[in-house]
Length: 126
Image (cartoon, rainbow, N blue to C red):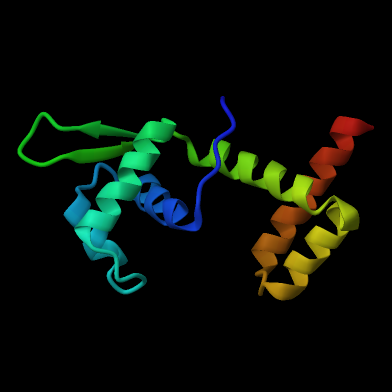
């Protein structure tokens, strides 16, 4: 997969599409109304950029354009994680994980999941 970077706004749109697709521009504007003041024009421009990047597919065969994600959520998260780690090399992975754990209210289930992931990583390198 080609390296693809998403802006914060593009992440908002992609999360909508990953959670529920297909969606129309109007549907996305409605879904984001409480979080943004984006107009249909703004969403349309951002979707055009996402389509140019190969992250979304547009189906214009019906009365309204429908948008589908082409980029898988897991792929996007992996790319974002790699990009973040490369930007903050100085503190290392330990600093990143400890900051995330302290700054977010992790549930017991999320902490257990993190332990599981770390144990799997150790088995893969041991």
